[in-house]
Structure formats: C-alpha cells, structure tokens
Amino acid sequence: MKVRIPSPLRSYTHNKSEVEATGESVSDVLAFLDSEYPGIRFRMIDEQNAIRTHIKIFINNDLATRLTHKVKDDDTVHIICALSGG
Image (cartoon, rainbow, N blue to C red; front, side, top):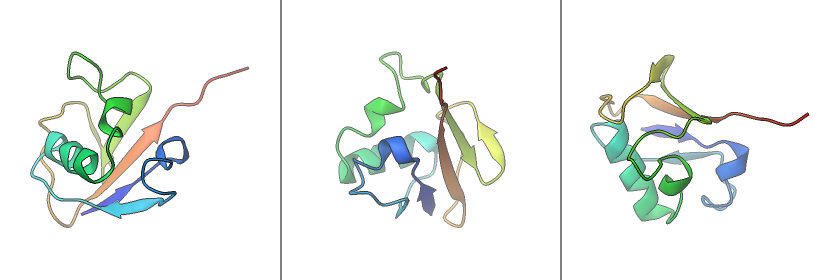
C-alpha cells in the first residue's frame, strides 16, 4: 500500500513523500515503516502505544483512531501532522 509521509517526518524516509508498506492494521504498517525507517514510529506513537495527539492517520478518506484499524493492500495511508505556532 502507499503511505503518504508529511514533511516533518521525511527526514526518516530520505525525503520521500510517499513510500510503500505492508500490513493488516495501522499498527502493522507503522511497525513495517519503523523497520525500514528506524525511529519514525516513535514520532507518531506515544509510550502508551496510542497515536500522538498531533498526528492524524487516514486510511483513504477515513480517520483511523485506533492502531487496530484494518488496512488493505490497495489502500493509501495518509499521515498528517498538526501545525502549531502563532
């Protein structure tokens, strides 16, 4: 499946905006990404194994609120980072 990487995380993917991944759930996809791009998962998942509040993960057009959210090979995973500042 395709995974769209936001700008703040592209330093982990060698500046790639889109990468390929495999898995049956969001958790599997993030584990795969971390095996290919070490450290990227920690930027999205906290110590309690929950999606960080400033990260949103969409499967196609559906918001994934849990790591157990199922994914399919033809899905596109969009990782969105919230922006802040003033």
